[in-house]
Image 1 (cartoon, rainbow, N blue to C red):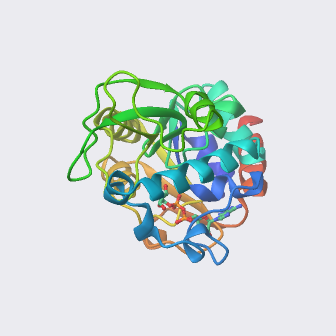
Image 2: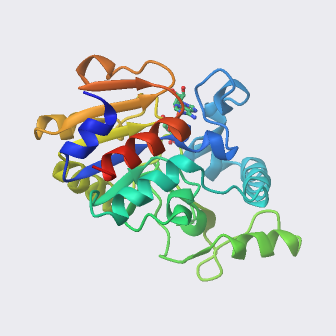
Length: 255
Ligand code: APR
């Protein structure tokens, strides 16, 4: 069975994407030989380090500004998944990415299980155990960039004075309950779970393909390196997402 066959045979394709779906847009992934974690120590990017260190927060804002200033755009892999949804063959997708490129590509039902870099939120004054406990304040990230431009290197919540952070999930931070619930529900409805560009090593996100399998879905993995779930997948396609997905989706939709 080819990927086009699996997609053609499916009514409810749910994609589960990782950083590898965005590398062809110019955004580095984390664990491949040129990934972010080959240059930075993930231990410096934990929730607690962010809370306890103004220097870590200032560095994080500098990195966020650079990321957003790059103006990344969707690539053919994002666009192919949006076509699948627009054709009524996918109820939505779950992404581990925080870049917003699926939405920019036209996908409407996107569950961002690790949050989004496009918003910032209050996480409270001294949140503990990886659990944000902010006042509920949340704004587009432009608010924070404007504060930085005005000379404030460590913006605080304008409502309660709490710490402000990207609305993303850092290491050792608990996931946002509503996003996790939506991801589980979406994966549970799939008759084909398609992972794209993920090393499938970060939990609980990487549980989703296994949940779909347990619910009777088929599992297809598109990744240019081996993953721990290759042995339980119905199909593994070793290749670049920007090549593999458009070809398979367009072949399936033209049948
Ligand atoms: N096409 C197909 N696969 C690709 C491509 C591509 N163009 N580019 C990279 N890959 C593969 C890499 O070989 C790698 O196996 O995508 C995978 C990306 O894996 P990771 O870098 O581990 O990214 P991801 O799985 O999304 O990481 C999960 O870890 O660091 C945290 O919160 C972060 O959401 C992230 C989570």
